[in-house]
Image: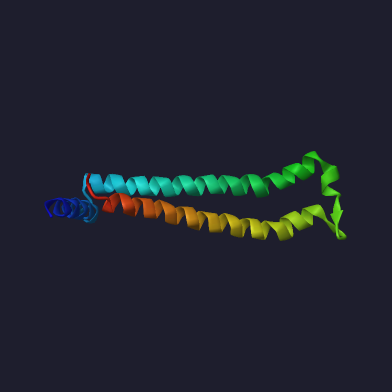
Length: 114
């Protein structure tokens, strides 16, 4: 029983440090914010390369820009149609990974002392 009580005491102390914004609590929150920022920057880079690279591709290889699919130019299909599912996929990935970061943070805060 004493071991269970110690685990609960540590979890309560950690939650209190977060609520009272002590140095330890600030450090824990800062780590979560950094993880979320790093995730946002990585996925922003994916979008920048994925969508921003298409005009470069068409400028470097003009023959690719002249390809037609079902009577529509490839640049129109990629930028006008395929970009939306790509952005939805990146948004879905961001939400999933951000929630994982938050769950890891919650698990860290509520983890019993060993």
